[in-house]
Length: 382
Image 1 (cartoon, rainbow, N blue to C red):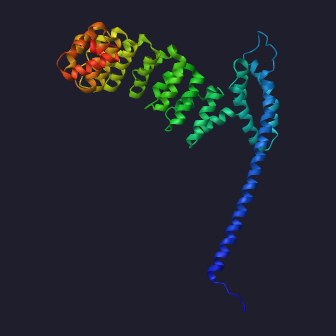
Image 2: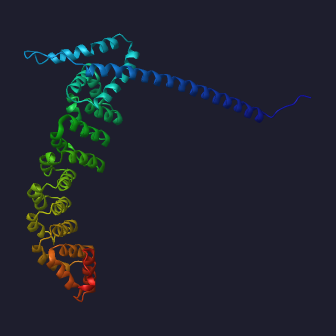
Image 3: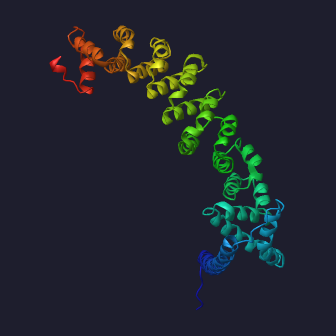
Protein backbone atom coordinates (compact mmCIF):
# COMPACT_ATOMS: atom_id res chain seq x y z
CA UNK A 1 0.00 0.00 0.00
CA UNK A 2 1.54 3.33 -1.12
CA UNK A 3 1.97 6.02 1.56
CA UNK A 4 0.42 9.38 0.80
CA UNK A 5 1.41 12.74 2.27
CA UNK A 6 -0.82 15.78 2.77
CA UNK A 7 -0.09 18.64 0.38
CA UNK A 8 0.71 20.88 3.37
CA UNK A 9 3.55 18.56 4.40
CA UNK A 10 5.04 18.61 0.91
CA UNK A 11 4.89 22.42 0.85
CA UNK A 12 6.65 22.62 4.22
CA UNK A 13 9.35 20.23 3.05
CA UNK A 14 9.81 22.32 -0.09
CA UNK A 15 10.21 25.50 1.90
CA UNK A 16 12.70 23.80 4.21
CA UNK A 17 14.78 22.62 1.26
CA UNK A 18 14.77 26.09 -0.28
CA UNK A 19 15.72 27.67 3.05
CA UNK A 20 18.57 25.17 3.51
CA UNK A 21 19.84 25.89 0.02
CA UNK A 22 19.57 29.65 0.63
CA UNK A 23 21.55 29.40 3.88
CA UNK A 24 24.19 27.36 2.11
CA UNK A 25 24.48 29.89 -0.73
CA UNK A 26 24.73 32.81 1.73
CA UNK A 27 27.37 30.99 3.79
CA UNK A 28 29.47 30.26 0.71
CA UNK A 29 29.06 33.87 -0.49
CA UNK A 30 30.22 35.20 2.88
CA UNK A 31 33.27 32.95 2.84
CA UNK A 32 34.15 34.05 -0.69
CA UNK A 33 33.57 37.72 0.18
CA UNK A 34 35.73 37.41 3.29
CA UNK A 35 38.51 35.80 1.26
CA UNK A 36 38.34 38.56 -1.33
CA UNK A 37 38.42 41.25 1.36
CA UNK A 38 41.36 39.57 3.05
CA UNK A 39 43.22 39.42 -0.26
CA UNK A 40 42.41 43.08 -0.98
CA UNK A 41 43.47 44.17 2.51
CA UNK A 42 46.71 42.16 2.30
CA UNK A 43 47.48 43.68 -1.09
CA UNK A 44 46.84 47.21 0.14
CA UNK A 45 49.04 46.74 3.19
CA UNK A 46 51.82 45.39 0.99
CA UNK A 47 51.48 48.44 -1.29
CA UNK A 48 51.42 50.70 1.75
CA UNK A 49 54.76 49.34 2.87
CA UNK A 50 56.26 49.73 -0.60
CA UNK A 51 55.11 53.31 -1.03
CA UNK A 52 56.15 54.19 2.52
CA UNK A 53 59.70 53.13 1.68
CA UNK A 54 59.65 55.06 -1.60
CA UNK A 55 58.42 58.27 0.00
CA UNK A 56 60.69 58.00 3.01
CA UNK A 57 63.55 58.08 0.51
CA UNK A 58 62.36 60.88 -1.76
CA UNK A 59 61.21 63.10 1.11
CA UNK A 60 64.44 62.87 3.05
CA UNK A 61 66.83 62.70 0.12
CA UNK A 62 69.35 65.55 0.02
CA UNK A 63 68.96 67.79 -3.03
CA UNK A 64 71.80 69.62 -4.79
CA UNK A 65 72.35 73.12 -3.44
CA UNK A 66 70.96 75.66 -5.90
CA UNK A 67 73.25 78.49 -7.01
CA UNK A 68 72.37 82.05 -5.90
CA UNK A 69 71.36 82.98 -9.47
CA UNK A 70 68.88 80.08 -9.75
CA UNK A 71 65.33 80.97 -10.77
CA UNK A 72 62.59 80.77 -8.10
CA UNK A 73 61.05 77.76 -9.81
CA UNK A 74 64.28 75.76 -9.87
CA UNK A 75 63.41 73.96 -6.64
CA UNK A 76 60.18 72.71 -8.24
CA UNK A 77 62.18 71.12 -11.04
CA UNK A 78 64.13 69.23 -8.40
CA UNK A 79 60.89 68.10 -6.76
CA UNK A 80 59.59 67.00 -10.14
CA UNK A 81 62.66 64.83 -10.74
CA UNK A 82 61.98 63.08 -7.44
CA UNK A 83 58.35 62.23 -8.18
CA UNK A 84 58.78 61.34 -11.85
CA UNK A 85 59.36 57.58 -11.26
CA UNK A 86 56.12 57.36 -9.27
CA UNK A 87 54.18 59.27 -11.94
CA UNK A 88 55.52 57.02 -14.73
CA UNK A 89 54.60 53.91 -12.77
CA UNK A 90 51.04 55.12 -12.28
CA UNK A 91 50.70 56.15 -15.92
CA UNK A 92 51.62 52.63 -17.09
CA UNK A 93 48.78 51.02 -15.08
CA UNK A 94 45.24 50.23 -16.09
CA UNK A 95 42.51 52.47 -14.73
CA UNK A 96 41.55 49.92 -12.08
CA UNK A 97 45.12 49.35 -10.96
CA UNK A 98 45.84 53.07 -10.81
CA UNK A 99 42.78 53.68 -8.65
CA UNK A 100 43.98 51.11 -6.08
CA UNK A 101 47.53 52.44 -6.07
CA UNK A 102 46.43 56.08 -5.79
CA UNK A 103 44.19 55.27 -2.82
CA UNK A 104 47.10 53.67 -0.97
CA UNK A 105 49.51 56.37 -2.09
CA UNK A 106 47.27 59.14 -0.77
CA UNK A 107 47.03 57.36 2.59
CA UNK A 108 50.81 57.08 2.80
CA UNK A 109 51.33 60.74 1.95
CA UNK A 110 48.75 61.95 4.47
CA UNK A 111 50.38 59.86 7.19
CA UNK A 112 53.75 61.42 6.32
CA UNK A 113 52.18 64.89 6.36
CA UNK A 114 51.42 64.60 10.08
CA UNK A 115 55.09 64.40 11.01
CA UNK A 116 56.89 66.58 8.47
CA UNK A 117 57.88 70.23 8.64
CA UNK A 118 60.19 72.58 6.79
CA UNK A 119 61.44 71.79 3.30
CA UNK A 120 60.40 68.08 3.27
CA UNK A 121 56.85 69.25 4.03
CA UNK A 122 57.02 71.62 1.03
CA UNK A 123 58.09 68.70 -1.16
CA UNK A 124 55.12 66.68 -0.01
CA UNK A 125 52.70 69.52 -0.72
CA UNK A 126 54.11 69.73 -4.27
CA UNK A 127 53.59 65.97 -4.70
CA UNK A 128 49.98 66.25 -3.58
CA UNK A 129 49.36 68.84 -6.29
CA UNK A 130 51.14 67.13 -9.19
CA UNK A 131 49.58 63.74 -8.45
CA UNK A 132 46.11 65.32 -8.69
CA UNK A 133 45.08 64.67 -5.09
CA UNK A 134 44.32 68.33 -4.36
CA UNK A 135 42.00 68.67 -7.35
CA UNK A 136 40.28 65.46 -6.28
CA UNK A 137 39.58 66.82 -2.80
CA UNK A 138 38.29 70.10 -4.23
CA UNK A 139 35.90 68.10 -6.41
CA UNK A 140 34.74 66.08 -3.39
CA UNK A 141 34.00 69.31 -1.50
CA UNK A 142 30.99 69.61 -3.85
CA UNK A 143 29.64 66.15 -3.08
CA UNK A 144 25.98 65.86 -2.10
CA UNK A 145 27.02 63.60 0.82
CA UNK A 146 28.02 65.52 3.94
CA UNK A 147 30.50 62.87 5.15
CA UNK A 148 32.41 63.07 1.85
CA UNK A 149 32.54 66.87 2.08
CA UNK A 150 33.74 66.67 5.69
CA UNK A 151 36.48 64.17 4.83
CA UNK A 152 37.61 66.30 1.88
CA UNK A 153 37.73 69.42 4.08
CA UNK A 154 39.88 67.54 6.57
CA UNK A 155 42.30 66.26 3.94
CA UNK A 156 42.73 69.71 2.37
CA UNK A 157 44.09 70.87 5.71
CA UNK A 158 46.19 67.77 6.20
CA UNK A 159 47.91 68.21 2.83
CA UNK A 160 48.28 71.97 3.43
CA UNK A 161 46.64 72.78 0.09
CA UNK A 162 46.20 76.55 0.13
CA UNK A 163 44.31 76.25 -3.13
CA UNK A 164 41.46 74.92 -1.00
CA UNK A 165 41.06 78.06 1.13
CA UNK A 166 38.16 79.36 -0.96
CA UNK A 167 36.32 76.03 -0.78
CA UNK A 168 36.89 75.78 2.97
CA UNK A 169 35.65 79.33 3.45
CA UNK A 170 32.46 78.48 1.55
CA UNK A 171 32.09 75.35 3.71
CA UNK A 172 31.74 77.54 6.81
CA UNK A 173 28.14 77.96 5.66
CA UNK A 174 27.56 74.26 4.98
CA UNK A 175 24.28 72.96 6.38
CA UNK A 176 26.04 70.12 8.24
CA UNK A 177 27.94 70.83 11.46
CA UNK A 178 30.71 68.27 10.85
CA UNK A 179 31.59 69.87 7.53
CA UNK A 180 31.72 73.31 9.12
CA UNK A 181 33.93 72.05 11.96
CA UNK A 182 36.38 70.36 9.60
CA UNK A 183 36.53 73.53 7.49
CA UNK A 184 37.38 75.56 10.61
CA UNK A 185 40.16 73.16 11.58
CA UNK A 186 41.68 73.18 8.09
CA UNK A 187 41.49 76.96 7.71
CA UNK A 188 43.42 77.34 10.96
CA UNK A 189 46.08 74.95 9.62
CA UNK A 190 46.36 76.82 6.32
CA UNK A 191 45.94 80.45 7.40
CA UNK A 192 46.76 80.48 11.10
CA UNK A 193 45.27 82.89 13.62
CA UNK A 194 44.20 85.28 10.83
CA UNK A 195 41.58 82.72 9.81
CA UNK A 196 39.59 83.61 12.93
CA UNK A 197 38.34 86.87 11.40
CA UNK A 198 36.90 84.92 8.46
CA UNK A 199 35.48 82.20 10.70
CA UNK A 200 33.76 84.70 13.00
CA UNK A 201 32.61 86.80 10.06
CA UNK A 202 30.86 83.96 8.22
CA UNK A 203 29.82 81.45 10.90
CA UNK A 204 26.31 81.59 12.34
CA UNK A 205 24.52 79.97 15.28
CA UNK A 206 27.53 78.25 16.83
CA UNK A 207 26.70 74.84 18.27
CA UNK A 208 28.16 73.72 21.59
CA UNK A 209 30.41 71.28 19.76
CA UNK A 210 31.72 74.02 17.46
CA UNK A 211 32.35 76.25 20.47
CA UNK A 212 34.39 73.48 22.08
CA UNK A 213 36.43 73.01 18.89
CA UNK A 214 37.04 76.75 18.58
CA UNK A 215 37.91 77.20 22.25
CA UNK A 216 40.72 74.64 21.94
CA UNK A 217 42.07 76.49 18.90
CA UNK A 218 41.88 79.88 20.59
CA UNK A 219 43.52 78.72 23.81
CA UNK A 220 46.47 77.56 21.70
CA UNK A 221 46.79 81.07 20.25
CA UNK A 222 45.77 82.92 23.45
CA UNK A 223 46.79 86.64 23.16
CA UNK A 224 47.30 86.31 19.39
CA UNK A 225 43.59 85.60 19.05
CA UNK A 226 42.48 88.65 21.06
CA UNK A 227 42.19 91.13 18.14
CA UNK A 228 39.88 88.72 16.30
CA UNK A 229 37.84 88.13 19.46
CA UNK A 230 37.40 91.85 20.02
CA UNK A 231 36.28 92.27 16.40
CA UNK A 232 33.82 89.40 16.91
CA UNK A 233 32.11 91.32 19.72
CA UNK A 234 30.42 93.42 17.02
CA UNK A 235 29.04 90.37 15.23
CA UNK A 236 25.35 90.44 14.34
CA UNK A 237 25.19 86.80 15.37
CA UNK A 238 24.67 86.66 19.14
CA UNK A 239 26.28 83.24 19.45
CA UNK A 240 29.52 84.64 17.97
CA UNK A 241 29.48 87.68 20.27
CA UNK A 242 28.76 85.54 23.35
CA UNK A 243 31.53 83.11 22.44
CA UNK A 244 34.02 85.95 21.97
CA UNK A 245 33.07 87.36 25.38
CA UNK A 246 33.58 83.97 27.00
CA UNK A 247 37.00 83.47 25.43
CA UNK A 248 38.22 86.97 26.36
CA UNK A 249 37.34 86.19 29.97
CA UNK A 250 38.97 82.75 29.73
CA UNK A 251 42.19 84.24 28.39
CA UNK A 252 42.06 86.91 31.10
CA UNK A 253 42.78 89.79 28.74
CA UNK A 254 42.08 92.88 30.85
CA UNK A 255 42.72 95.23 27.91
CA UNK A 256 39.34 94.02 26.61
CA UNK A 257 37.51 95.77 29.48
CA UNK A 258 36.56 98.83 27.40
CA UNK A 259 35.17 96.67 24.58
CA UNK A 260 33.20 94.56 27.07
CA UNK A 261 31.82 97.68 28.76
CA UNK A 262 30.55 98.83 25.39
CA UNK A 263 28.74 95.50 24.93
CA UNK A 264 27.32 95.71 28.47
CA UNK A 265 25.90 99.18 27.88
CA UNK A 266 24.92 99.11 24.20
CA UNK A 267 24.18 95.59 22.93
CA UNK A 268 20.60 94.99 21.82
CA UNK A 269 20.34 91.54 23.44
CA UNK A 270 20.12 91.51 27.28
CA UNK A 271 21.46 87.94 27.34
CA UNK A 272 24.65 89.05 25.57
CA UNK A 273 24.92 92.02 27.93
CA UNK A 274 24.59 89.60 30.86
CA UNK A 275 27.44 87.56 29.37
CA UNK A 276 29.56 90.73 29.21
CA UNK A 277 28.75 91.50 32.86
CA UNK A 278 29.87 88.00 33.85
CA UNK A 279 33.11 88.38 31.88
CA UNK A 280 33.85 91.73 33.50
CA UNK A 281 33.45 90.10 36.90
CA UNK A 282 35.84 87.31 35.94
CA UNK A 283 38.41 89.86 34.78
CA UNK A 284 38.03 91.63 38.14
CA UNK A 285 38.90 95.10 36.85
CA UNK A 286 37.64 97.97 39.03
CA UNK A 287 37.01 100.11 35.94
CA UNK A 288 33.85 98.10 35.37
CA UNK A 289 32.29 98.85 38.76
CA UNK A 290 30.45 102.08 37.85
CA UNK A 291 28.84 100.55 34.75
CA UNK A 292 27.82 97.38 36.59
CA UNK A 293 26.12 99.39 39.34
CA UNK A 294 23.78 100.80 36.70
CA UNK A 295 22.33 97.32 36.13
CA UNK A 296 21.76 96.21 39.73
CA UNK A 297 18.08 97.16 39.41
CA UNK A 298 17.66 96.28 35.70
CA UNK A 299 14.31 94.63 34.86
CA UNK A 300 16.05 91.78 32.99
CA UNK A 301 16.70 89.14 35.66
CA UNK A 302 19.72 87.55 33.98
CA UNK A 303 21.46 90.85 33.39
CA UNK A 304 20.65 92.00 36.91
CA UNK A 305 22.01 88.84 38.58
CA UNK A 306 25.18 88.68 36.46
CA UNK A 307 25.90 92.33 37.25
CA UNK A 308 25.48 91.73 40.98
CA UNK A 309 27.75 88.66 40.82
CA UNK A 310 30.35 90.66 38.89
CA UNK A 311 30.33 93.39 41.53
CA UNK A 312 30.97 90.72 44.14
CA UNK A 313 33.87 89.35 42.09
CA UNK A 314 35.42 92.81 41.83
CA UNK A 315 34.73 93.33 45.53
CA UNK A 316 35.20 97.07 46.09
CA UNK A 317 33.50 98.82 49.06
CA UNK A 318 32.12 101.45 46.67
CA UNK A 319 29.41 99.02 45.58
CA UNK A 320 28.12 98.49 49.12
CA UNK A 321 25.51 101.27 49.45
CA UNK A 322 23.55 100.22 46.39
CA UNK A 323 23.84 96.50 47.16
CA UNK A 324 22.72 97.03 50.75
CA UNK A 325 19.69 98.95 49.55
CA UNK A 326 18.73 96.14 47.16
CA UNK A 327 19.03 93.37 49.76
CA UNK A 328 15.66 93.97 51.41
CA UNK A 329 13.95 94.58 48.04
CA UNK A 330 14.90 91.15 46.69
CA UNK A 331 13.97 87.57 47.46
CA UNK A 332 15.07 84.01 46.82
CA UNK A 333 18.18 83.39 44.71
CA UNK A 334 18.67 87.09 44.03
CA UNK A 335 18.74 87.97 47.71
CA UNK A 336 21.41 85.32 48.32
CA UNK A 337 23.40 86.59 45.32
CA UNK A 338 23.31 90.14 46.69
CA UNK A 339 24.37 88.96 50.15
CA UNK A 340 27.33 87.08 48.64
CA UNK A 341 28.36 90.17 46.69
CA UNK A 342 28.15 92.26 49.87
CA UNK A 343 30.25 89.74 51.77
CA UNK A 344 33.00 89.95 49.17
CA UNK A 345 33.25 93.73 49.43
CA UNK A 346 35.82 93.66 52.21
CA UNK A 347 35.52 94.05 55.98
CA UNK A 348 32.68 96.57 55.72
CA UNK A 349 30.60 94.06 53.78
CA UNK A 350 31.10 91.31 56.35
CA UNK A 351 30.29 93.71 59.18
CA UNK A 352 27.01 94.60 57.46
CA UNK A 353 26.08 90.90 57.17
CA UNK A 354 26.84 90.39 60.86
CA UNK A 355 24.47 93.24 61.62
CA UNK A 356 21.82 91.63 59.38
CA UNK A 357 21.82 88.54 61.60
CA UNK A 358 20.35 90.71 64.40
CA UNK A 359 18.06 92.74 62.12
CA UNK A 360 14.88 91.03 63.27
CA UNK A 361 14.07 89.86 59.74
CA UNK A 362 14.35 86.07 59.98
CA UNK A 363 14.82 85.54 56.24
CA UNK A 364 17.57 88.13 55.85
CA UNK A 365 19.16 86.86 59.06
CA UNK A 366 19.26 83.32 57.66
CA UNK A 367 20.69 84.46 54.33
CA UNK A 368 23.37 86.55 56.07
CA UNK A 369 24.34 83.62 58.33
CA UNK A 370 24.59 81.29 55.32
CA UNK A 371 26.83 83.67 53.39
CA UNK A 372 29.08 84.36 56.37
CA UNK A 373 29.52 80.62 56.82
CA UNK A 374 30.41 80.27 53.13
CA UNK A 375 33.05 82.97 53.60
CA UNK A 376 34.61 81.08 56.49
CA UNK A 377 33.21 83.23 59.32
CA UNK A 378 31.33 81.92 62.36
CA UNK A 379 27.76 83.37 62.32
CA UNK A 380 27.35 82.48 66.02
CA UNK A 381 30.05 84.98 66.96
CA UNK A 382 28.36 87.83 65.07
